[in-house]
Structures are given as C-alpha cells and as structure tokens.
Image 1 (tube, rainbow, N blue to C red):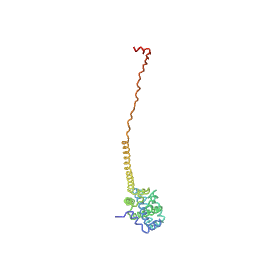
Image 2: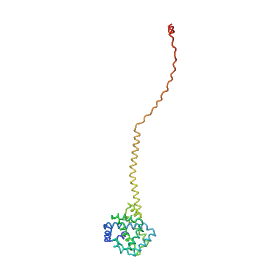
Image 3: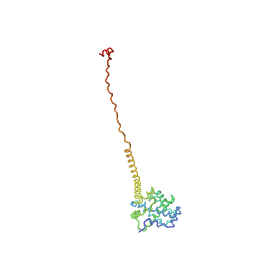
Image 4: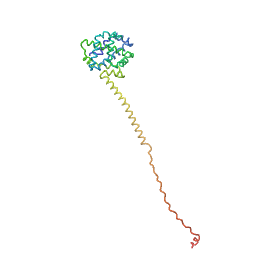
Length: 262
C-alpha cells in the first residue's frame, strides 16, 4: 500500500530535525512529532476542503512554484531551527492565510494542545509544516507529476486519511473548524454529539414519565379511599297552624244557677 501524502511529508523530517524543533519550541521530540503530525494534517485537511475550487488551486500552484524556485527542501535545517531564510519566511506568511483564513490562530492553539506544548508552539509548528507541504508539492511538480487538477484529486483522496491526526476531535470551536476541513469527518462528529444528546435526554424522559404516573395513581387512590361526603338533609320548617279564634262565653248569672236546680 502506497504511503499517504502525510506519511511522505513526515518522512522528510529527520530525527535531528525533530530534536532541533524541540529545542526551538521548548518541548520533547515525542511532543514535536505529535504536534507536527497534527499541524501537517490540519494543513492538508484545510487545503482538501477547497480542492474543488479552481481559483484556489491556481493560487496554491503559484505558491508551489515559488517553493520550487526557492528550493525550500534544501533549507529544512534552518526551518527546523525556527530561523528560515527571509524568502521562505515570506512564502510561509503568504501561505498560512490562504490555507486557514481567520482560523489560523485557533488551529495553532489546538495543535499546541494536541502536542502538549506551550500555547505559542502551535503557530511555530504550522510555520514548519507549511514549507514542508509546499516543498513536497514542489518536488512532485518538478518531477512533472503535479498540476492544479491532479493536486485537487490528490487532496480529495488524502482527506479520509487525516482524521486520526486532525487536532481537536470536535471538542472545541477550533477543533470543529479544523475538522470541517476534512470532508465527512466533521459531520460524523457532530452527528455523534447530537445522538449522544438525544440518548441522554431519553434517559431522563423515562424516569420522569414513570414519576408522573406514580403521582397520578397516588392522587386517584386518595380520591377513591377518602371519606365520602354525607348528603345534606334540608329541614323545611313547618308552616304555623292556624288557631281558631276563641269564643267568649257569657257567664251564667248567679241567680240563674239557683234556678237551674229545678
């Protein structure tokens, strides 16, 4: 199986160069290797995201031609030491804004975090990765195997190989921006995050539904088992009974009472 572009580019970095880079950035050779892998992958991924833009590929090929004219790969030792020649430094200064736009500092920060290096080391690694990438393309161009069309095809073919090395993993805004440069990688990370959120939400919905049913059952039980209200009997007062008027009797005169004995 043929080496990927990333493998071929990293093959240009010798152990002595890694040691020199580590000394200039204040890190370990192992950290530098991890960081340089991430910086190179981020660079290739960003280029791959615009591989279908003929205008962009034309700009990129102009920079590749300049890298060939300056024989960038012959200056790798000075690049590794952090003191590239003025022309190489100017070339890198033109290349990075084209490759990353406004995300350059964010990507650099993520590269440094991936490598476990200081915050300022990420940009230094990007400035080393840039001439390596351009020099590799220039080497292919001088061999007659590279033009704008073939470069676009190569970048698209390389994109699936970069996911392991791209920094960020989608955990930060910079990581998402960098992953977006790798077709298919960002969408899978975002979709996984959405699926995880949905799963977490469903874990809460089920207990809440059960709790709601229990509360409803308890209220219903209370309603059925509580004391039933007694019917209220309305007592209607009886209508007053009419009293017959008394008839005054005339007293019998005493003289008559004696006559009655007859």
